[in-house]
Amino acid sequence: MARTPLALPTRHGVFWATYSASGLARLEFPPSEERPPALAEVAAPTTGMTATAEWHRTASAAVARILDGLEPRQLPPLDLAEGTTFQRSVWNELLRIPLGQTRTYGEIARRLALPGAARAVGAACGANPVPLIVPCHRVVAAGGRLGGFSGGAGWKEKLLAIEQAAAGFSLQNPSAAPVKTRAGGGRAA
DNA sequence: TAACATTCCGCGC
DNA sequence: GCGCGGAATGTTA
Image (cartoon, rainbow, N blue to C red; front, side, top):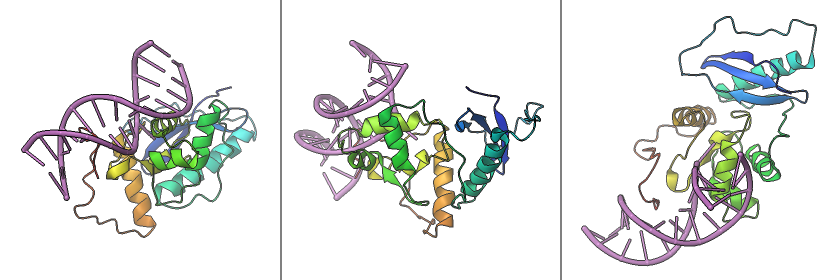
């Protein structure tokens, strides 16, 4: 049911949102941080007030607020039907993470009563079709490492910085956040 | 069966 | 005490 992707311009670039008959089904990050393609690809649903237009309006506002480090006032309906049961459980947990806070993959796994499934949680995060709105960027690896991110690790770091600054945490972490994307062996702290 | 957006334990420095 | 290497664990295509 994937319809035409709609452009979702923000201060950080143009996102692309795809809607199904049930709601927002997919959200894609801008190709590069400051390269709004912005060619004539902006598909406008000119035919009347479809639900899609309304959802897109809601989604645009939500994304804009998130990128400002604010809690979105309202989320569009999400179409997560494509996910497996396990994946939807994970995504549901992600939606419960307060803005400005983070959880580890292991912690999410433990919340699902599957203490050993940290890696599976990571896989589910990677399969998240609606990043940003389902805050997969708030899930980090144990030991202070950042972990991976589908949209690029740079985005993850950036989003966390925005949220933590807005949430009032001391963003000025002098030396405590070296952001080791990948520590050689694994034992970090 | 192979591949992961991980984690933990054991050892060497 | 810190860092590196390897094995384990659960889900998905």
